[in-house]
Amino acid sequence: MKHIIGGNPAQPLPQVKTVLVDEDSAGQRLDNFLMRHLKGVPKTHVYRIIRSGEVRVNKGRASADTRLESGDLVRLPPVRISERVAEKAEAMAQASERGVPARDFPILFEDEHVLAIDKPAGVAVHGGSGVSFGVIEQLRMARPQAKFLELVHRLDRETSGILLIAKKRSALKHLQDQFRERETGKTYLALVVGRWPANKKVLDKPLHKYLLPDGERRVKVVSRDDPDGMPSVTLVKVRDTLASGFTLLEVTIKTGRTHQIRVHLASEGFPIAGDDKYGDFELNKKLLRPGAAPSLKRMFLHAWRLQFNHPASGERLELLAPLPSDLEAFTIHATPSAP
Image (cartoon, rainbow, N blue to C red; front, side, top):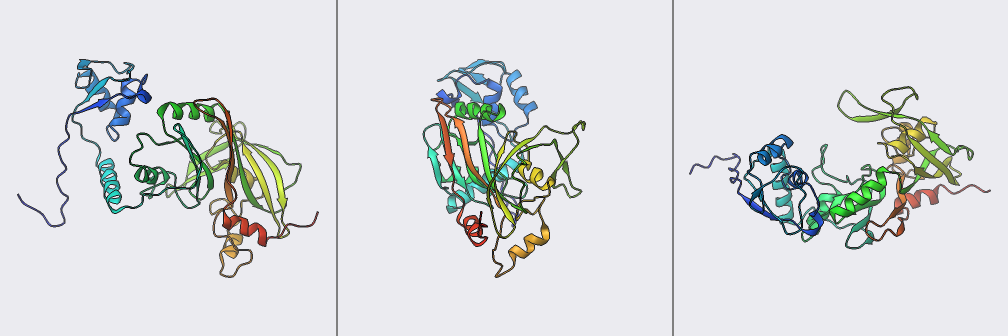
């Protein structure tokens, strides 16, 4: 066999697999079950192998809308996945062997259905867009015994605070339904530049996502009659006014649009301190300078409180994540003004 120096090793040929349907997957449609187990395979191909009879349930043919039951045996034919997915899987396997970047995060709540962590700033929630690994990949590496770990929602890379991960498919669906139906309570702590008017409590402004020439994503406020505008509502409450000219706000979002808090606050003339996309760039530079007092090296936005119904018991839960030490230190140096 020839070995070419610097060449890519031949990928092993895919094999037939038989997967046992567990209780957590019971009731799921066959096509959705296959999407999860054949990541990287185009949807058109998934439906093709179902129609051709290459996929079998308990040795018999089945349709895409067949509802699986616990204990069913599903035959998965040999299929090739995309090179990108294969490369990512290989990279994760190699990283796992080296013991990095597996990582556990501070846990705020955990049971058999859901995990809530306190995500640090600077860590993406998932890989992609130039980031090889995110929180969810690192958690999976740190917990190889976990059968199911999926993000319930997302936080911007530079935002710290509460992040929910489902440990069962049933919990994922239940929690995502709550987020979609606005049954959750999500409150952030944001420090803005300037003195926020205490009577300005509701920001109801449509938002529109667009791309810069380099492909980077941005969001802007648009008029109510803009066909591309998405309804977006943010509630604001003054928590503290600091002598250095900043205001600490409790910000509750009623809709979950991309960059919603950042854009809504900036559109009112009060950008979040340290925001490198919508902020006061000159001030940000001053706060980054060595010896700056106070000093701020990141965006001051923290997912502080989250309220939701437990996906199994229905009990209303409230989780709190205290301000990280760097943000707490900034507020201390920027001493509150006297009442």
